[in-house]
Image 1 (cartoon, rainbow, N blue to C red):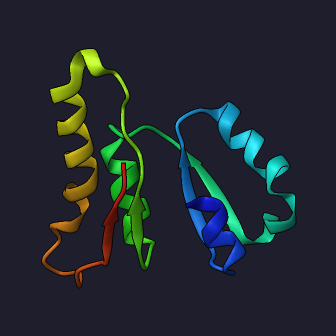
Image 2: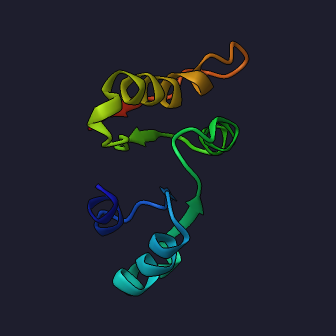
Amino acid sequence: MFKRLLERGYQVRGLSRTQEGADRLPKEHAKFADNFEIVVGTLTDYDLLEREARRSDVVIHCGFIHDFTKFDESIETSSRSTTRHFKDPGRPSLPVRVRA
């Protein structure tokens, strides 16, 4: 999704769950370096996710915690990370696309 958006000319802010991943992306996508920013955090860093969503015109949620020994907890985390920041009555609804 990240690469497709960049190839179509969109400005992208993306979440990397590790600093290593955040450091790798500019090298892998150097030709798009002016079109993206990476934020380091986790799917349970709800304040960060909320802050980033407020800065965005569109949120595309593709993350999932792939720990199938805690599948129900992973589903709950994914749901909370998707919906928590869209409950602000003072803000118009954002378009939402969920892809796992």
